[in-house]
Length: 171
Image (tube, rainbow, N blue to C red; front, top):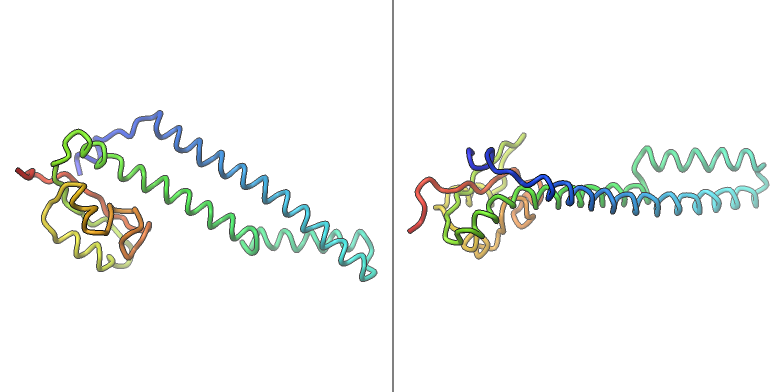
């Protein structure tokens, strides 16, 4: 994995990608805060209609909101799912960057599908792909599985594999 270890995804690219993700998450977080305020007011209103004192209604509404945040339910679950998707997308782009850049310089450069380390077992797609001969990026894409971590294998974005330049390049 010398090429992966020596590859530098330029600092400005990383900072830009991370800045975009942070900006999206902050915008979504503000939207959630606004929605939670509306939801809290609605909860208080419903309890007030039932004859509950304002103080008790507010206390109960706060408890429900905090439970929603703590347990990742409702709108918080949607936010957490969105966060995970954004981080997976950023990771995918950063992992694919070395292969894509090398392929951009030399489209015929061959890569081997190398299994990453996993806690349980590899998906059948990755096992099959790792046993195949080296191919260029375009040929890997033609197989229909995309590149590692692009989400087209059975393991989706959870893939830990990499494309590593073949020792003996295709002719």
